[in-house]
Image 1 (cartoon, one colour):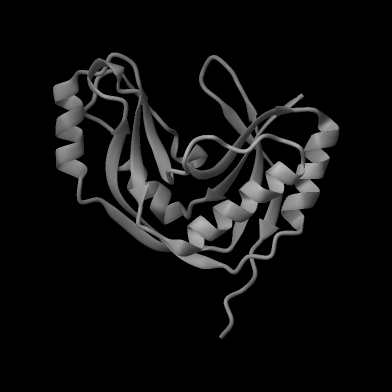
Image 2: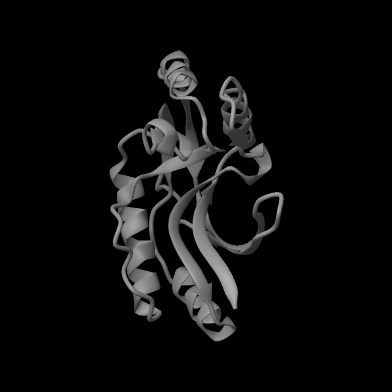
Length: 182
């Protein structure tokens, strides 16, 4: 069984800027810059043959390349139940279109449709018992964060290896988007 997800990679400059946001929140486990990404679809555990079907379906996608800008920060959960600090994404029809195409390809491979609404973000930190006042200060101090625009010219199928120190990601395939016409 393979634990898979489809994501957009970030440029080194954007990763560096995101890493600069880290700090000031006790109980936060900050994401390593080299593992930062924007998940388009978490797939979960699938057998090898279904992973090959997913690879083939992603290779058939025809979606134009575009640019993306990160915008603002936020938190999933509230108070003592806050669990993730994230950087948001400026509204993008191109991103929504790409995500819908990826979702459709995954469903065609026999997986159930994602029930949650797509909420594009980059995970900055996972939280455990982080003080609400420190989270609020983080959000206030970094609320005007912006990075980009950055080019989005491919998507990646990743395998996630879970371990004690967090997940390790292995790229299984890269799928180019169609170049923007001159």
